[in-house]
Length: 512
Image (cartoon, rainbow, N blue to C red; front, side):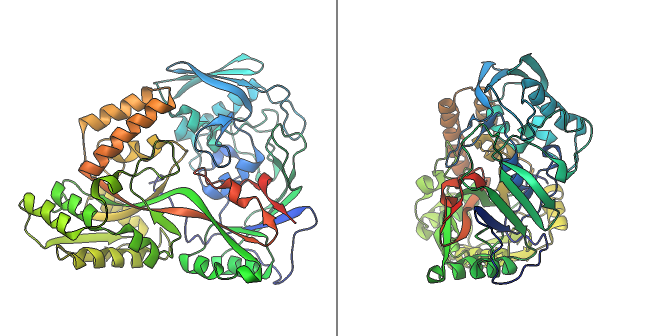
């Protein structure tokens, strides 16, 4: 499943550096990461590593501003729904790509049409499935005709699927070589060596706020242990993504050595799925009792060294419309209340549960997390738990196709910053998990929020959906991962970029 995504525990790229030697020249910053880059052509990527660079090299019509959670104009001067299925954007005047070519509405149309035409298997073209056609209605105006009303469309346009490329440079029917990409973002690409290095320099033609640092040197590491050594020794100025909870806990202790760990809100979530048509989780009281017993705070502290925070809804707390419904409905973990729920439903205790996880997909803490969940449930005296594990590929088959697991763990981060992307995939007719859950009222609310063009109305509908989620418990939210960036003393600006878009905006970074 493309939408079941991974952030932690990546082991992806290789680089050899000399310990103790700073690689950043004056006016530059060196960034280290374990992220993978699949491609730098927006039509060929659906991964965070690629999107990280693309987000700094290209502009979209709309963007999620640093620290924000709703779309705002970027290359566009303004965008609005003309009708429920017609979305019109007017570009800012005088836009140029980094090579000097003008950026026009024709480039916007070319970019969106190109993603759909290429339909790369690793690309994001499925996000444009509701796009019927794009029309240039002026040098600076583009009109997008949708197949159906879609309140998520502004958020979709903030995804790298909406990155604007110059039609005079990018081929219409195939991907462009990484080293040749050109955009209109805060930076331009000077050098790229796959799995090793990307060198970016400030784009003097960028229409937005000028990047604070002239050059950013991105170094790719195979192991988080190597990245940890590099930030400790000063070989990189900024390190992000891929650290284990134990490594972050160790880095927190090194303030005196010039290392700072910065933490902020993110949008990766972890949750339990209940097979609602398979015993014993087909009984609502069993699911509600589990929700009443699970101690998210203990899980976050004992297993994850507080690199995650308790999650009380499918929507991460930083998203517009998020509502901590499980905290409201169940309060603190309470065995007596759980026992009462089961007794009222005539459920005999202890209830035997089979709980499953996959050991590598979501980071090195997953086995310990399920052991802690087992301990909590069995300590209540209401459950006995047998924990099983499978590698990712057979796990997907067993969970989604064969429906063999009554209870299992998954992780997720949205394709774009919108509450629908954390509700529709889970709640509409069993979701992508096909877990047997179906609720006509839920489907109706999902349709209504998609048809709505106002953020306040959509947020209210999101609230109603989350209330039903807490009542029916087809899935149980557990935690959301904090964004963590580790910086050397003197580096500023990284903390300003924490938001659900999961973008480290290089243009905000400075170093004394």
